[in-house]
Length: 215
Ligand code: DX5
Ligand code: ZN
Image 1 (cartoon, helix red, strand yellow):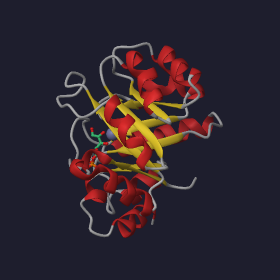
Image 2 (cartoon, rainbow, N blue to C red; image 1 turned 135 degrees about the vertical axis):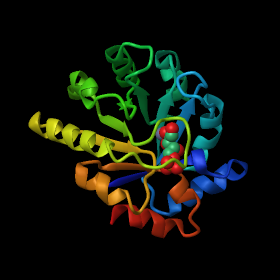
Image 3 (cartoon, helix red, strand yellow; image 1 turned 180 degrees about the vertical axis):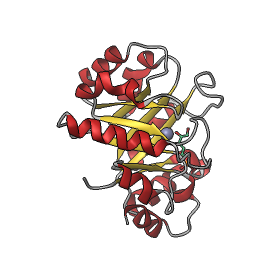
Image 4 (cartoon, rainbow, N blue to C red; image 1 turned 90 degrees about the horizontal axis):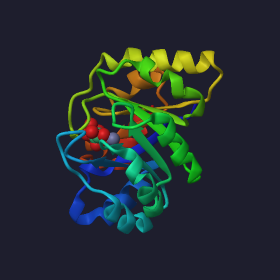
């Protein structure tokens, strides 16, 4: 599977988001990763629907929305209307995952479930047939710029093995601490969508940084 790069704008310069989005697009990224935090599911706040709505027009890439919020069901429609092309919510959130997946699909966009580092990968197995993507967090969600947790590699390979056993072409996304040193490890384990925030946005040569994640 071709490796896709999703640039997490959590580490972008918020004073110049239009320029940062264009930089990600012209550097060869495949998607924009939009992290939504509610200060409850995770101990941090980020941005929400109005921000997505106003920046969507500056960039032609797919918007990959990652909801780190307690009540995802309530916000599926607003995020879709604001321009989300894909929505991922957390298995640990306060919701019925089947209902949330069906709601996302009913709006004509793709759906993903994410699990935190301490959640066993088997927690997503009941939903694999109806999911487009599983996001394995490789840091504790809530902040950019943290160190990659190596124990998550086993979860990636177990999930890839299970998807192959069932004959599913599942996207496996990883998020947290992804840079030139960790990208080869997660790709070897079976991940094909790599989220990267601080590594990409802090680099002075983003096209080379993007390329280093694919190599
Ligand atoms: C963390 C977010 C990530 C974050 C990753 O909760 O989900 O998307 O931006 O940042 P880096 O790539 O800096 O670890
Ligand atoms: Zn994220």
